[in-house]
Length: 174
Image 1 (cartoon, rainbow, N blue to C red):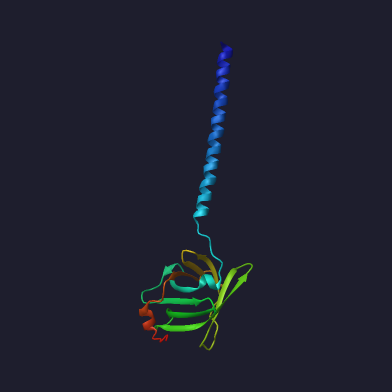
Image 2: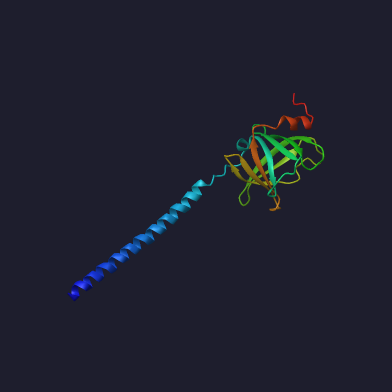
């Protein structure tokens, strides 16, 4: 009779150990699955090339804040000849239309860097070069001033520059 009690206790202890192991493995397995789902949900960044930049982009945020009312910046990139058209009312009280060319280089440490040159400007070159990150298929990208990690711009893709903006800069595209 004593040996039966001992056998039942051994079986009960053995069952508890197996149950504990199964629960531990289940928790571990579910935690890995949860991590994989989060990584898969994050959109993969595109390579920064003239083809992927091609089109019109609107400056949506600057340093984490939306632009103040009445200011804007639209830039349209043309992939074939690596040129741009910029419509802006950002750093001046008057709307401006600027054109020029751009170039993209890949730095092993910093990643993709875009810089440009204006067509009709005394200085010619953009004031800054920008590190381009998070160029997403859904239509956004982040530009960080090279040498100033606190100067960050977020651009979103749009279909075209609004006609009111084109009219405000007073250009004749014909």
